Image 1 (cartoon, rainbow over the protein chains, first blue to last red):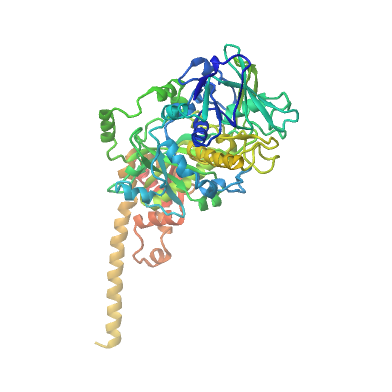
Image 2: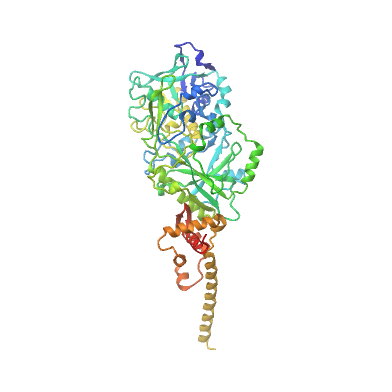
Length: 513
Length: 127
């Protein structure tokens, strides 16, 4: 079912069995799970079915600390959420990503990779990616042209990625959700406050406001907040009628530990072997490539060097070519084109580009590195308010010396291994070789990936949600999405956040059975 | 001929042949020393730049003689002292990577030997 919330009477109260706030990747993945579950699910989406500038404007925020993308361009505020412009990059977290690492402060999840393993294949289906096969050799069997570099697995390995079409969840699942009798989607239903009981131990409802000035309430025994990392924190902090610091924020943790992936051009590779080793495994054509490899360092090396996890992709390019940061090329206009462009590229153009890249021998190296969890990297409330009266978010993105040092160590080790294997020679860019306390270069960039702010930890003094993703101290509020990540891994967050959401969904189903 | 004289003659002949072979190998290496394999992949200008940077930043390895000696000293003792046939320059480069004898010059992660080769190249083939 679907109702445009603007058509409801002012003061309406809508009741259900489960209320999901936000219809992006997490919200939609969860709603799909409840179709046929014989429960009345309320799915609240602030936007409509398409892009509306004034909805996006609600996401505008203040940038403090390091430079960052405009917040209103980094997330989409309509049904389908940011899958409306994502690039479809998927990979799984490594087992090490979940572990406590004594060299990474605040690392360690209360769950392990094995806890997510049952949910990853289900997440594949939601996002429309290929088989649950993540070993390079599995893909080589599917396509003999996909030959991984012969690296010493004790040092480095080829980590696989798979690419969704990319799936625009708002388009893919609109009919299914709108047609479901037990999921009731409300569009243009912007939550402006999470209403708690007097002791702030339980949620009593979601207060929704429309641009027309109507106020509505949505009530259910259980609530799931799934409106993205920054907006989740913003809403919890702004809901301070019963708890002055905001809901779930008794220990001043909501909004802290904001993390991104550091996606930065970091070096070059030139192949030295004759004939050149096959590189098709590492090639990527948007809209065509189903899987590719990126190079990563083994867990043993990460432990020994005490560095963060990262992968590096190969982009055919002349050595002299300048490399821009994601901030420099990923302007809001480019991001907007991601939303509106055809997914399948022009066939002739693709053939041309593949011909040019037929036997590349030189590559730019694009690193994607996890950010070390940092309590000072945080989302707070701005003094400014949006058109619905909610304080805007203020993002203070901060990095540490460990983030910086890890780049150099990564390239030293991988460069040595590439030489040892006789594949080629690697060159680090100047900024990679600078001291760990040097300022970040102008090529600093991120992946538009927002994680942290309501991190998972069994101890309420160290995390906002517990291992089931329930907000500590509040009996009926859970959080779905990358906001709960204690550490960021080095891969795009979408696949893992959908897997976590499916795990949460199973948990809630068993709790309501 | 007495057996003892025969053995002495045979030994001298064998050592002479070995020494001759070693000389040939080392003369070949002397040529390859100043022509790193990297030339094919990186081109003369980059190799020259790497060489100049290496010489400027590595104490005691700024002239051709010290660079040749440094490469020679990285050979196994049997090759260095006794003159026995030792590893080729290409072997030394491989060994450097195996054993972690790498340096970062102009951002490039290189074997110590090939960095020295680049340095020699920058001396013998200045811009």
